[in-house]
Amino acid sequence: METLLPRDLDEALAAIAADPEATVLAGGTDLMVQVNLQGLRPARVIAIRRIPELREWVGRFIGAAVTHRRLEIGPIKALAEAARTVGSPQIRSAGTIGGNLGTSSPAGDTLPFLAAADAEIVLRSRTGERVLPWDQFITGPKRNARRPDELIVGVRLPEHLPARQAFAKVGVRNAMVIAITSCCVIRDEDGTTRVALGSVGPTPIRARQAEEMISAETRPSEAARAEFARLVAAEVRPITDHRSTAEYRRHASGVIARRLLERVLP
Ligand SMILES: Cc1cc2nc3c(=O)[nH]c(=O)nc-3n(C[C@H](O)[C@H](O)[C@H](O)COP(=O)(O)OP(=O)(O)OC[C@H]3O[C@@H](n4cnc5c(N)ncnc54)[C@H](O)[C@@H]3O)c2cc1C
Image (cartoon, rainbow, N blue to C red; front, side, top):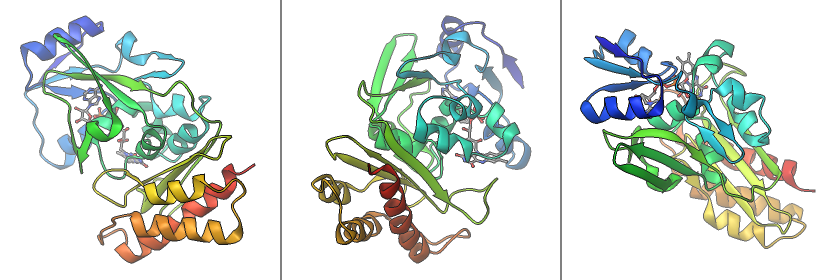
């Protein structure tokens, strides 16, 4: 296995243009599991974690190589809450937001935040840049729209990101757990509310009917909150697997969405 260590983004883009079959390695917390346990044998690896441009976090642009640890202590509340739930301290120190996107697992913990925030994914190749809305980037379970000669450069958040935001996930333990369901709720001062869920569909899911209903409620009553939970539970598309039944995932999604809504209300 040949490992390339480009010093900057230009070198990395040249390397991937020369060999689009090469495997991109960031923190390795997903990739090395595939190598160690699933027999993946990449012929050539391009290690990108130390590339300065990818480690930048400037305002609403978060570089792909920003680790969960940095997100966890960063200023974006729901993203910090999401990053704090990823793996263990060791995993959070190595794993990156770009790797979470690169894997595009339905259970990726930063993804509900990115979906609720309407984030854009910035991709670059030697021939130019593409900026895709999150729902055009993530196309299915562990599938995304990255082209083989592109790197995920980072994530661009909207100019206006409401401060009232919260994330939580449900799992069988408090730590080191893959989500059974996860949820992010963001509410603006005017009541506009966005809710996204993970692990309950092939990609993160925005519960649009629930959003529309609760956004019209300036002071959601008990009945409105219950209806919000009901709509969220109706809109998710969970499956039954070794982690949970679909039925429990659906129920837990409604419960957690309502709790988060209550956290973000004034
Ligand atoms: C013990 C353990 C616990 C975990 N717990 C959680 C958890 O609770 N929640 C969670 O969401 N995840 C969890 N994970 C998964 C993993 O830590 C995250 O998905 C992490 O964000 C991956 O980032 P990475 O930098 O390590 O990616 P890598 O493993 O380096 O890469 C992952 C994939 O993305 C591609 N890639 C990475 N960066 C780029 C880039 N800039 N451009 C193009 N492609 C790229 C790689 O080629 C690879 O296909 C866990 C993993 C382990 C081993």
